Image 1: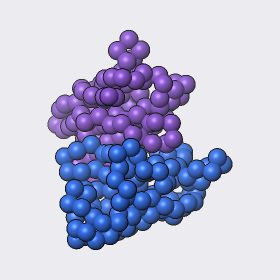
Image 2: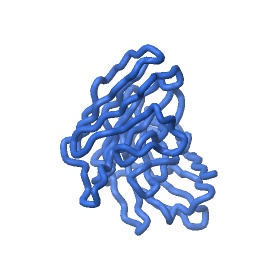
Image 3: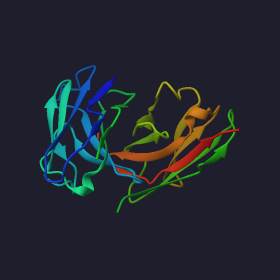
Image 4: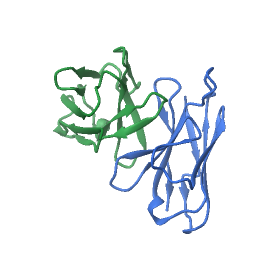
Length: 109
Length: 117
């Protein structure tokens, strides 16, 4: 499954909203009703961290300014008000079928 | 607190082999699907391999036939044996736990492999 993110670079102003799009080449909707789409953030010099799982569920400890939405082949990560600590590279990843696959990454700066 | 600690990275010549380990604390590697993900310099994240709770193993096309994933019961660790290494295998390798909902919710800090002559 090919994952395509846009934009690849996203300059933002603190306090302003931001949005990242992710499209998959096949539907990520499982027969159980869940979309197997995750969002990760890799901050500079750090390991990736899970933000959103199953398309729209915030991981433990993730601020509520992060929101995941979408279904099937089109997904979006929205940040309501960007903070300085949010800089890094955001990745979507499909976890429906092996081999799992990541998008190219979106650099938020 | 669940903790994953990778080790075993280093400098190796093309064609060589290396064994990466991921020590796991506060969970059993047999109770979760466990993954290896790599980050090549200047590139994005790339899923490499996983081993399921039933022992089923999966690999990316780029490493299939060259890398082998396994679990070590006594050490409660995850391993990745890398062979026939190529320059393009140079990367930081992370192990990660999948929480059961397609969510890699715990990651190690990574270990770096450099393939160069």
